[in-house]
Structures are given as structure tokens and as C-alpha cells.
Length: 396
Image 1: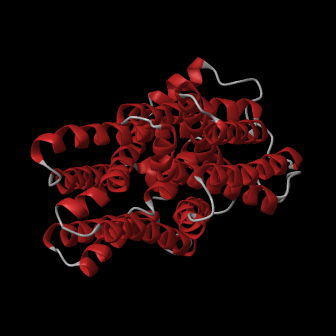
Image 2: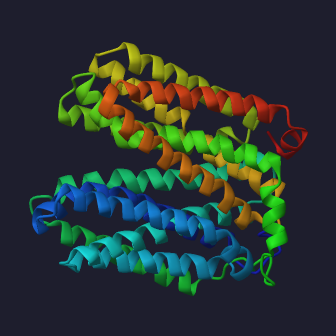
């Protein structure tokens, strides 16, 4: 929908999307960062902590399945308001709860709201972005910056207020911000739904039968797998295999997030100039260089540079692929986003499961092997995409 002839304010709606992505970044990082304090305060076992951390991705997966049809039929106002409300209730439940079932339910609600915010905000920006594919990809890349800002802000807040605030106060402060976001959504006019009559089973069947859409979903499967094992296992790998001290290993993870965030900020301009295929090719090269540095170096500076390159190389994949998806299926944009992001979610879960299973037998050296496998698969799927005439005409 072109913002020039519609009855909503493009800037306000774009800000709304950025706020939703910011909330997603904050809550996805804050829960992991605050989990040790929660365990200590309520004497939770590691098994109970595992149940809590599993509850969150289950919620993400479930709402990733449904957010697309909801957006296509009911519009973005309904989705973003409800999903932000779920995050708000979940945060308050963690901060005020005292029993295990309350924590598990709260983590599930946070994941449910977060998954819908992630998918809904990406679909919204693709919806309101007119012009070339480069402009659409650039706007999606700029949106992704706010995930990084939210993720980076949590450790800073905890470092600044750790002496004065408990985890409950941090969560209540975040809840206040989410509450203001909900009020903003309620007062805002969003684009009208594209399919008020609803999404039919035939529509979903046609999307699932689109081999080009599934090819793009496969690319995000391996990209999400790569990003997730870096996010979850890099600090432990740097400590165990590269013998960095705890603070330096966490700095390595920050370098990854920083590299991803800064690169997405620059991609907002770069994708308006260079074709998506060139950007993706250069991104894969950066991941490869970062992987080589990570594998064959032990110095702190080189390892931090390697993590930064891995983050920078990971920046373009989701904005570019989601932009292509929106061009391929403009009338079923939300549902198509649900499919590719659901596949990406399974990439996240499956590679983390394999990493956890194999690391117990082979050690943390399996970390770089799995990244190599994911990168090789990304290169293979990328060259398969280059052979698609539909993707070429869509902007690749």
C-alpha cells in the first residue's frame, strides 16, 4: 500500500514498527540476562531454569505460525497491540511471581508476544515501503537496527543499576516502556488488512507449494541456525577453547551484536545503491573471513574482530529475504512471512539441539564445525536462488 494515497501516517507507523522491534530485542535478551538473579532469588534448579528457557521459544514458534493470517485478515493494529500486551503481562508475571508455574506461563507469554512482534513489525515495514526492492530492503534493515539497540541496552542498564536495582525493578521499568508502546498502538491508524475475508486453506496450500518461497525459507533456516548458535554458545566457546576470561568472552558476544547492528544501519543506504545479490555475496564472504579468524586465532583482538565480522556478515540476510518474500506474494505477505520465519525458527531450535548434543561428546570445538556447515548450506542455497528467474525479477 502506498503511503502517499492512504489514510495513515507513514512516519508514525514506521516508528510504531521500530518500537515493536525494540521491545522484541529488549525482552529476548533481558530474560537470559536476568535468569541467574531469578534462580538465586527463588532457589530454582537448573532443570527448572531449563523449563523456563524452553517455554519462551515455544511461545515464539506458536505465534510465528499464526501472526501472518491474523495480519492479513485483521490488520496490524490488532496484532501489535495484543502481542505487546502479552509481553507486558509476561514481564509483570516474572517480576511479581513467586511460583514456578507463574514463571513458566510468563516466559511463554513473553515468547508469544515477542514472536508476533518480530514477524508483525517486519511485515508492516514491508507493507508500507514503496519504491524499489532496495528501498524496501533498506527499511527492513533499518528496522533490524532496533533489535540490536534493544539487545545492547539491557546489559548497559544492568551494569549501571545493578547495585541499586533488583531484577524485579529492571523488569518493572521495562514493563512501563512496553505499556507506553501499547498506548501508542491503540492511538495510531494502521494500514487496512489486505484480506478481511480471511486466508483460505487454498491460499496456504499455494504458498507451501511455491518452491521459490521454500528456497528463501531454507536460506533463513541456515541463517537463523548460524546466528542462534553464535548467540547462545560463543561465550562458552571463547572461554573453553580460546581461553578468554569471562568478561572478555561476553565482550565477544557484544562484538557480534554490535557488528550486526552497525552493519544494518549502513545497509539502509547500501541496499538502495547495490543489488541484493551483491550485498548477500559480500555478507557470506565476511562470515567466511570471520570464521577463519575465529578458528585459527587465540589473541583477544583477533577473536573480537572475528565476532564482529560474523555479526556484520549476518546483517543482510533477513532484510533482503523478507523483502523478496513481500514482492513474491504481496497479497499474502503476512502469511508468507509466517512460513519463512517459522522455518527459520526451526533452524534455530535444531542447530542448538545438535550443538548441545554433540558438544557433550566432542567438546566445544563442534561450534566452528556447525558454523561451517551452516555457511556451506547458505552458499549452496544462495547460488540456487541466483538461478531463479522469479527472484531475479523480484530484485535479487
